[in-house]
Length: 319
Image (cartoon, rainbow, N blue to C red; front, side, top):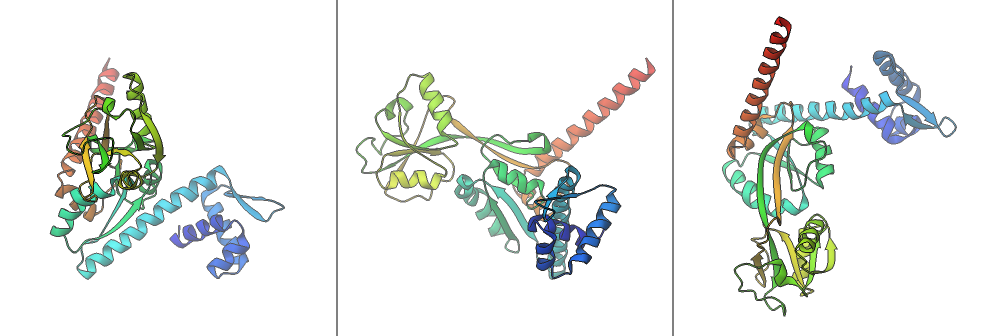
């Protein structure tokens, strides 16, 4: 199948009508309709259905499957083309990573800064989003490595390379009237009466643990990002509870106090798509941080499990 047919099929779906798709592709509509007919004949299945008086395009179940897989196939083809061009030009390629916005600061400090210093020829593409959004970008082939702080949806399609627990941190202005900025650590019970800001990801956990311990916290604000929570403390609206990683470069007028409370922590995970070959630059990145060792262990474990299954089948047949 010509890859251009896949590109044009995606444009048809995204344009909602053949007329608009033909305009975007600078083609005559009969030629585009002929391509669609060719694809349907090739796969022996109807891919689209017309709606609203025959003008608007809708997808059949098979059409939706082709639409999703065509995006993945084209992403792989485009990545391969870029890697070959990088190789010919003597560059090292482009690393494509998905990560949560709350992890940007810690990711830059722990991964990007040392890796860039030792690999100046590598370029980067980052896709920031929540766990579901970044998982989709990896499944679609837009990125190869993901960094997440929440449980993965469809975790069965990914390989977990690294998992690390981080404690939570209280962020306060040094001139705040509630908490001494000189404390070495703090407990949740010490935060009663303090106007708190938490992120939506942390809020359920903080509330559950405080309620179980019969601690009455005042959650005045809930936000999406760590950056917003830090701003809450910066402008002396109260104190903020954030993840421990990536808070090293905040303003000098803010204080960071570790929170010591059983069960109050965040888990950071590094993962890749299961059973999908990695580009050279992604393998280089994983090897640099010794994460490829974990991948090797995972692959070895799979081979052993397959071997056991085969042995088990043989024994069953013999019996």
